[in-house]
Figure 1 (cartoon, rainbow over the protein chains, first blue to last red):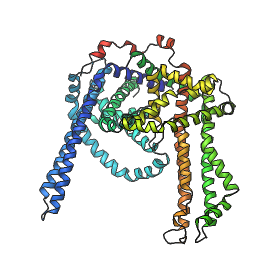
Figure 2: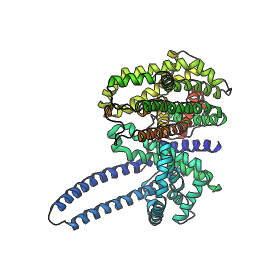
Figure 3: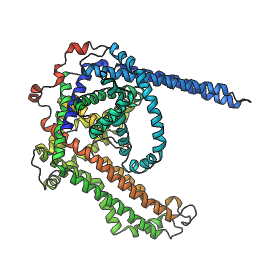
Figure 4: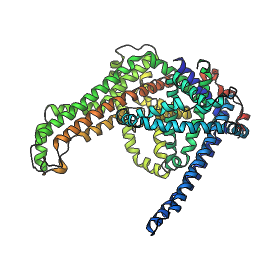
Length: 258
Length: 329
């Protein structure tokens, strides 16, 4: 009961900060613009790829170098944009921490976070990528069974719960890493800390991420078809930013007990 | 957003706290919905099995015309299957309103800290007809508004399709709360609901949006916070589950491509699965329905009273306009 009340207070505080510092949502706007550009670029890449493939296969000799070139460009684009979005996420973490400390979001604070943590987070993400891949292979069959049983019987709630579970245990490690800037630790220590935090405040974190996911899924629909197409990422980043503040405030509240 | 509206939105979180506390300390609030869900599930299963037993009797007929089929079906359907189907339909259509009327009375009694065992039946007895009347009026309103709604939806590039139901829900948010709290007439309840939303439009709409977001489920729930449409979904499922032989009338039923025993097994399996799924999903939705129902009662009774807001020490009131204006980045 006490924890629920504290969470409500943290949500109030998060909304207040969001209201006070509108600049917190500028990265959301940037993310949306990047996504629109990416969508535009990918549209042409796909068209070129499809046209090229048709021409390539219809000619007497398949032009493999052309196909490989297009595939390489696509992979490169995905990698570049993944890095951009990763940097954006670190920047958001930085201004979120700043705003909770009472600092107005500035470009300096935004880039300070990216500069300081980019490589550490990148290396950790590479490590996690391998762990995720192994985990995915091991858990694929149980996951499909889970989807077919619990997922179907709970009308989708089971799948949503699994997403919340992952978010609760692994969704905030970059934020915690940057929050503990004064006590430097490795990326994996931060992942472990996130896991411990998620375990200790399990239902609280499930509730936080459930609310975040539900709002992210619902709000774009309010803007109609066109709005949902153009502004989904903006809305999801806005919701994510507010909930990053909530997670941070909750973490600070219970930091001593972890 | 004006400071006052923002403070009112923040105040919503205090109402959530009260609703959560009421939720925890009044476990009996869950009883009516659990019983209703189980009854509904059992009725769906028994109706499906009864219809299957009719199918069993008719399956040996190798060919027939439509009229003969209908007369044979009707002769088998009369009696217990008919009564069972009628009871199931009645429970589907009226059950949720009956449970809701009893529950709202319970919410109010819990809010007043005087909840007792007989409150559900007292509430259902006193408010069922009013709730039903209100729901029918809203249903008629939607039928009348359907064409303008569609036109507005298209003209606003589909924004209207989602925004109009939210606006309607905002103005109709507290009519049920008003009925049980003030014991007023249906007309007065609608009027009070309209006035409440009018004087607190932005915060009330924020609550409706938040509630809809939280109750819109992955399986395509209505997000209305009411279990009325859920009932309709189940009714659809029920009709879909009825064995239908029309497309293949005249063909031998023992045809290789149409194995009746397999179909029967499939229908039994699917009906059971859907029923169990409906019960589980219903139980999860129940948590939200009760929480947001309680919040609505709290909202109506405490609803952003001016005195309350004046003395509130909300962080938003400390916000300096300059800071908001000059927020960089």
